[in-house]
Amino acid sequence: MTDQRNQSPDGAAEAAETRTEAAFAALRADIIAGSRQPGERLRIERLKELYGIGPTPLREALQRLCAEGLVVAQGNRGFSVAELDPHEFSDLNTARIEIEKIALRLSISNGDEEWEGTVAAAAWKMRRADTALRNGSGSLEAWERANAAFHQAMVGACGSKWVLRIRTMLNDQYSRFRRASIGLRRDERDLAAEHAAIADAVLAHDVERACSLTEQHFRATEAALAKRSG
Image (tube, rainbow, N blue to C red):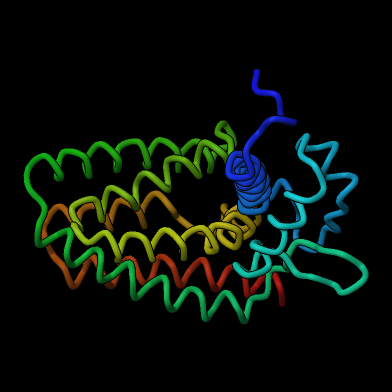
């Protein structure tokens, strides 16, 4: 093991950055997953116990999460997880839809038989997950994994790294809201039918229908969250 007393300044800086990255990744994942609840106070002492990371990297990670809008700084009161604001979600959802449609158009244009096979397989798994969630035999976490894989498959032939990078950023933010909406309103929507219709349009290379159905699908989540908040 390296003796930290003899560690070079560059080595010490790299180690500190690694700890900050670890804290950032762990907190970010838990906020998106809902393990850290909206409005929850993020006390440094408590976070040290939960994540086994020191206070300095935790504070730096929290500042970075503030820049992403996942955490809110409360002056002398510290930090808390950002609330789920339906008005913010509407704006976020608009951006998410437009990027998703760009990715879909490119993917359908570029897609080959191998991509079609991936889409068909993802649609089959999505149908099973939707059915399990609706009848109470499946977990929300399993559904989330299938849902992410389904929508990723639809845009899998996009080919634009920048479009996909922006899509990922928006999707991470979007996931917090979707989880809240699906968890509460899952019996009020036929998610299996929505997903099947999208997959059918994509496999038919019907760009306009695929984009229209995807927008409706995302807007339904927005409406469910607005209903919950109202």
